[in-house]
Length: 314
Image (cartoon, rainbow, N blue to C red; front, side):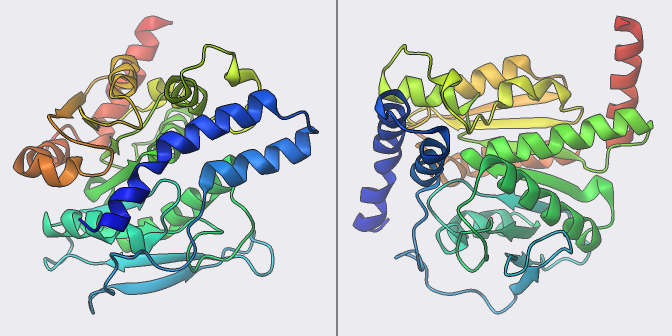
């Protein structure tokens, strides 16, 4: 892996430490503090990643512009259909710093496993147009991507949602909303399952852990990303993946998410895996875990089981 890439991979630890210092020590108004927090959190790298060597010819570039977006806003996306017609598809949601050009190595692995992939840049990243992202805006971007994703793969049992790092929090928020909507409307879940990798319980938890502080940063952060409070609403098969050598986001956070989640679920801890290479290092075990997720109970059965459990608990 290029030296420049490895150097940049060390920065998330500094990012969380600086974020903690900012929210604890900056005597500023909420507006100024919130903007500084978002800028430091997302740390958007301009241009293309140094290890990016161009898109394969089979990738289609899309621009999503729903009517509810303001003028000058759009989401840039890649749609990479699998070689096999009507293959299962993955909605890919990335983390901070790197736009899609920095994600291609992971997207390639998912596609090589036989999946079509729809991957997006949030507004403000890469070729997506918009202001500095926020928690609410990336959640909205995921919903816009989901609307297009349903058209690209119309079979609910051939859809997966995938999120890496902070993208895992975005994926959990989307999946939780889909689960709540299905329960409210008494309809089958519109997705087969959820995969999250190298993610965390909440932004406050990982900031405090990496910065080594016991101060109550949760009450100061404007960007919450509280996945631990949403994970029980995931009424679908779940795969949680984490590298055991992740120096940026401790694997215990994925273990805590896993413990709080409903069945069916699986935790895959990758020995020696770092924040970014668990998919490559996990190899066949990772691929088999995703395939097993696709072979788990159909969404309708999981939703029905959850509804029955809720009825018994009431």
